[in-house]
Image (cartoon, rainbow over all chains, first blue to last red; front, side, top):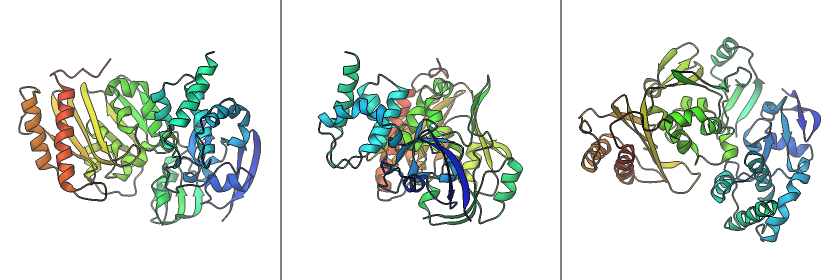
Amino acid sequence: MTMEIKLKLNGKILCGQIEPDCLLIDFLREHGCYSVKRGCETSNCGLCTVLMDGKPVLSCSILAARADGRDVQTLEGLQAEAEDFVGFIADQGAEQCGFCNPGFVMNTIALLRENPDPTDDEIRAFLAGNLCRCSGYEGQLRGIRNYLNSRKG
Amino acid sequence: MINIQNYVRPQSLEEAYQLNQKRQNRIIGGMLWLKMSSLSVHTAIDLCDLGLDRIEENQEQFSIGAMATLRQIEQHEGLNRYSGGKIAAAVKDIVGVQFRNLATVGGSIWGRFGFSDVLTIFLSMDSYVELYKGGILPLEQFASQKADRDILLRLIVKKTPGRFTYRAMRNQRGDFPVLACAVSRLNGEYRAVAGARPGKALLLRDEKKLLSDGITEASAQAFADSFAELVPTGSNLRGSAAYRTHLIRVLCTRNLLELGGNDDHGNQA
């Protein structure tokens, strides 16, 4: 039996018909949010990270029905905020295949909103739920650190 | 892959309870573990509209709603002041922030999962569960019971004066623990809890009075040896039974030495 949900997606009200077991990731991709990627299927890799009511969550592990009435943001709606720091990450060659990048960027946005001046250990702890099979994570850390240092002038 | 035919957000606990009496219906909690199953669910019952996502604190206790997330208890100032930061320490390595923003305290406690850091740390405290029909009962008693069709409403943690320590061994950050160990001193009573044995967490007290003269290296070692002998362990892909028994000895000794002293107020600011 299908059901209707209504949520705010990247600032716009969106209504949709879903199956009760539709996952949020599938709903978002059906509505054009291709930055939200399916990775591990075991709630471990962070690739599918979106913000729900401002908090980073795994869209592969939450029913779309639970997003009814909520505010959901994906990278498609946060590109301006991401632009501030993604260049610093790219400068470090931290993205090799780039597949993990949207999840990393989304969680970095959540980190910097919650803690605008994190230590390296705080960055590592916050991003521990984002897996990257190409890099050793040091490039991402250096990129975020360089961005934070640039803000301090 | 889980198959769900209907999704309902009950507007009252009674409605949720009645729905939950049917065997094919399920309360979905954070849904992280449930999602991994191959269940066919007639009606998924989502408790998200029932105000169970709050952590309330008064002079006597903390009341943690079943839908409060692990991230909420990780960041709750009062809980971590009371526990000396050990609640945050117990959950901080559970996958990542995104996961902990979804995983619920109720899901962890209700599931009585063997791997649960959450059950392990709260068993070391003066903790109770509040069930919709079953009322309030000690967490230790609840953990030993089989799941029924009641609804877990809250986890209650009394502010009994105490000191707490927690350590877990993981093969890598974010993985399930190979062994988790919490030790506490509550009103002069020592409690040791071993989780991820890999069975569900087991709480034992100092019945042999090995720590009655205080914690020294010798008494800590003697207690840890006794604890390791009494706690059954098993083998799985993460570690053997013998390795887990060794870990109990090591982590329990370290926890006791960290606990130190004889007063019950060391963790509290």
